[in-house]
Length: 276
Image 1 (cartoon, rainbow, N blue to C red):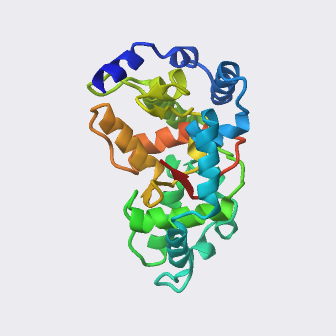
Image 2: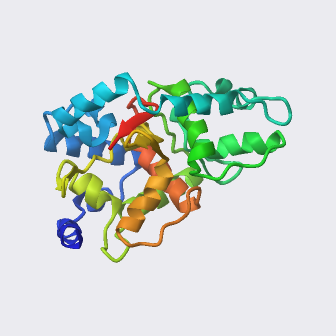
């Protein structure tokens, strides 16, 4: 495993160098062009399926599983959390924009008043606290995970629509971009090493997924019954390269999610999907 990772790392981070001084939209378009030229037989819209876009057999199995998802009971639990009244008597729909419908693709967003990136989980917790309840732990699969898994069904099909406007937003975006392209850990590896330079290649038996499209489908149910949020996946990736990870909800991970989500702008959200 270590030899494989070191070998992949040695291939370099061309896209990181190319995108170093680019603006957000230029970053996104360069990545879309990069994957379009490297994998001309894969439709850009199929990147929402991650590594499945490179493997027709796995895609076929995925579609079969999604006809009767093994985790449908968990989505029902999330719906119950969503509809359960808070201590004030109000529900999440009462304090979230548009009743919580068709908004997930707007997050993360930069909140000028707070001077920081705000994720969908932040908005949910702000609603809870404002109505007399305690905040949920970020990444907790039994509370925040189930709730967001259901809530994102209310935005299924919405196109990712992240905005980077103003100096504060640009700084947060650039910080997330820096994390994405910076090598870290004992293996001296970056997010881009796997998900840009080596997307479509195999690490042992697993195909590596492309960065474009990543943020459209979280939380996911891995193996059909293990719910994993996007930022918990960040933790797992950093552990894999032997870096001490941040906790879900940290400024660094929020900024990373901000950048990571922006580069998927224009792609439709998928709610509650199966992954290996």
